Image 1 (cartoon, helix red, strand yellow):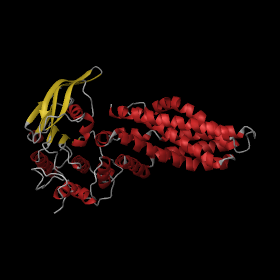
Image 2 (cartoon, rainbow over the protein chains, first blue to last red; image 1 turned 90 degrees about the horizontal axis):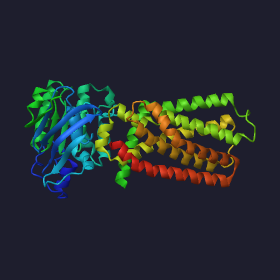
Image 3 (tube, rainbow over the protein chains, first blue to last red; image 1 turned 30 degrees about the vertical axis):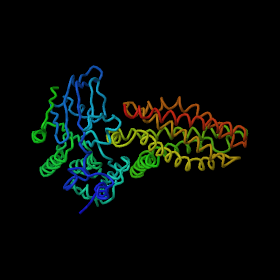
Length: 241
Length: 226
């Protein structure tokens, strides 16, 4: 059986195992013990005179999916960018909380989150394997080559393909983005219209992945108008536009 | 520290790999440098300048070619991340100082490749005789580093703007002008063999490069995150 470096460290008693670590049927790494919840209150965003949304509040908990819905232009992607720390809200508060209630500092959020969004791309000049190697290195992860290859196979990509990502279809590029988001085993995952470029079998696959991530105790936030994706969540925030 | 360096090297290696596959910045740098050099060598050549004016005027011409070639290509490092929408994931994955150091290393490689091609060619075509060749290399190296530090931070600032090309030149020139004056003095000194003037110039370049490195390292996380 293929073992990740973290699983090997658990076997060597270097780090403690968590309840959901074994067996790991789909996840490469386990999430942070106890998970991370996101709480946001009275969040508003304005660009000069244009108000995107006025006051949005909600909560995303480990082992659950929060679904953000709303018409086009209502600010779903903007709210997602605020929640993952890429944008600052004009007003309001976003907090990442550990199981013990401690706040996670904002500059540490990136380490614990994975994002799949249309406005965020991987490097087109590099191959899929080179992309994963790069993101692993800048995240300070020592991931073995076999693990990268396993992750690519998991998302349905051929690890031996030497074509740069520029030559990929949008669906294949989307699968690579998902691999990039899962690479560091984040406790929180953001999906913005994640199944939009996938074929029906890819959508089935994605649903299975998201449900398994939720089962593993990860916090999932989805921004979508897709009726199928809406059913994955147990909480809902609707933006009115 | 070693982990930080490894991460910075990963950013630089990624940029270099992508650049050597597309050659956008390299072509811009090389095209501008070689066109300018060809024009200068054709119109002025090695013998049109008076003997006593040569060290100073040829130093001016050399650095003008290097500076403007750098302005033509080095702004790509951050602009490309924004234009190809890869910047958000990089912001989430890497620490800001890692990105800054990686981009600086990448720009350093580009500027040193440019100088390695341009300086010997310029000396040969223009008949530029250097009395202290190793000290000339030192001026080029330190001047190139200072140039890379300044263009890296300015490129990061303008990457968010819409009128990037114009803004890069406008923001760079006030920062680069003092450096340009000092490196020209240093190059003139190594051409004429004026050791005292060379030492003074080199100290000034090192001081400026050091100050810009510190300012950039503190400024970059704010520019990158917000």
